[in-house]
Image (tube, rainbow, N blue to C red; front, side, top):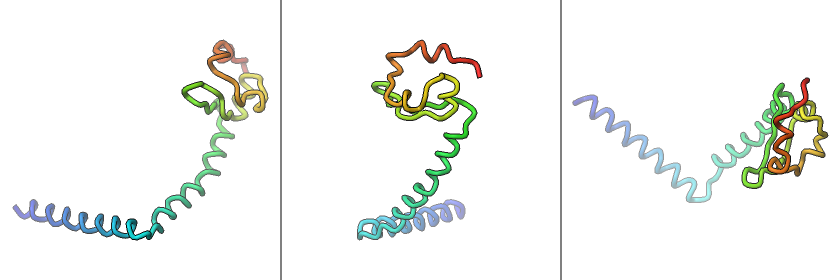
Length: 104
């Protein structure tokens, strides 16, 4: 029974904390949201570095039309295209390209 009361007390405490956070956000205090946004912006260079330095070819494309939006250097090396040639290329239009990647 004591364990149930403790759990109930913990839940009530968490509920109070959540209500405070909701009130802060509703009142226009968006410091926590700004903080999360700043952290996200700070991590972008790390993701870009990982993308650029990957040993595997990476392509980012728009899923519906399969248009290439970005590629890393390894994709250029493997497939033999310049980055500027890749951007805007349709995966639907050149399906055999990706089956016949040249050897590194």
